[in-house]
Length: 262
Ligand SMILES: Nc1ncnc2c1ncn2[C@@H]1O[C@H](COP(=O)(O)OP(=O)(O)OP(=O)(O)O)[C@@H](O)[C@H]1O
Image 1 (cartoon, helix red, strand yellow):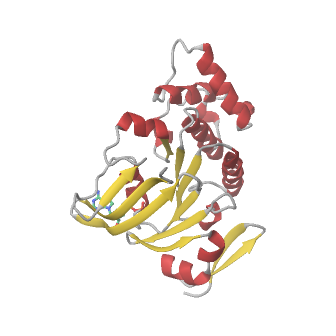
Image 2 (cartoon, rainbow, N blue to C red):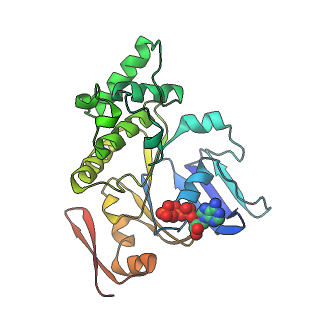
């Protein structure tokens, strides 16, 4: 039988410097779903990405199991080809004079710098992703000239150039002004046309759009709600998640949170 899940964690426990980040975490993510993982600061979102990317490992125990792409031990090269992660630290690693075209191309080589002697095939692949994402206007611009939203989209294009199975977006709209935020949200929504599935990690409810099939709420390393966004997103769950009294509304597919009282 074909395995439906690319990520399977059964009763995993994970520590960072003696601090227990996850206690008996159970989570499966299917190849067919775009998923949002939402939680407050310190809930374990980044740690889960680190587990997926094999930067940290859960405790080995007979009753626990971790499989990524159906493998308990996955070759890192294979993993890096199947999963691309975009986080906010990457921006600081890029040569400000690198043009967006070359930045995207560097993703084919797992680098963040100008690639000498690029092949015609590589350039063709870059042109295709630029066209698909409708960002030809950015192609010749230096990375440092871009708005933060445009930087984010260029990094997403770079992450997609190798056609990964999974794209992990770590806080894609944090620190963006409204215009940039909506620019990024709209572009990410367009990615639902691609074969690549998205796992997006956020603490901002407005990141959740209709392309996401499943919302997972994480608090203090535990999943407190998991399911379809219309079932899971409600004032009760958000009160629990963020520990504040809020009212949640949805206007034409855009989720909003209003604080009720101190
Ligand atoms: N290196 C570390 N040593 C000890 N504890 C850590 C370490 N890194 C993270 N933690 C703790 O693990 C918990 C989960 O942290 P993590 O960074 O995964 O949360 P997060 O949801 O990504 O938070 P944020 O939204 O602020 O980035 C937090 O309580 C944090 O204090």
